[in-house]
Length: 274
Image (tube, rainbow, N blue to C red; front, side, top):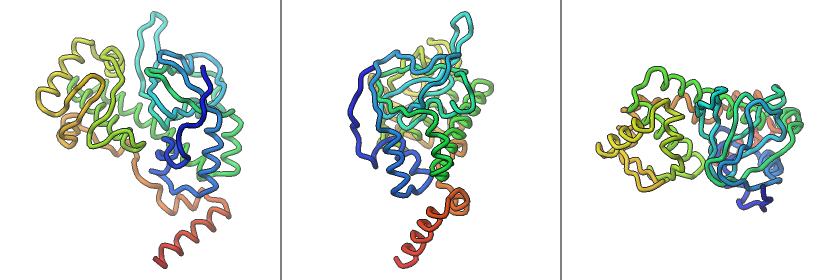
């Protein structure tokens, strides 16, 4: 592990972008987020950020790079549960559970911010809207895991692969890491096989089929989705489970303390004047 200085401005960090897609953050909330990301480290590829069965320590925020959440059987067989992308949080529920029920391993070099678990409780007391936004982020990940279960149980190999590509494209778009259907996919076919419950041979054949149909292009680790609508149709993709919507104003106010309610009222007044 190496310590690293902050490499991004406050309003361009992946976590800020991700939460801002859900909630209009106040200046105080933005500054609190910046403080949470103050302690930053870099980790190389194939590093275990969390191991199944170990006690939770710090909460971590991925700022750059990719990792995987995975579970393993005693004989070593592994299932990739989800991909951990910039803006995602590791150990969000460490105040509720003592030990991790899954592992998190880096696929690439990553930049990670960390903060002690006690700050989760502090956030719920002092910044309830921000805490609600982080809870939304956790609920969104649970929805993705449920969708992955549906894929493993009911979608065909072609549907599973198409669905995952569209999901990654949508998630990366939120944090400005995908443009016009282009994004970097630093994932081996072995990892894709572990995520989609397929053999490497089957993954290879399925990717070739998507490429030959003109829906995607592959150039090393770079993938281009030529027709998002058609690829989504092939994967029977419905983005409702990603909850890529802003929180309704009535719920935003329900989570707000008095000072945030005053801020919201000023924002409404400013909009009315405009």
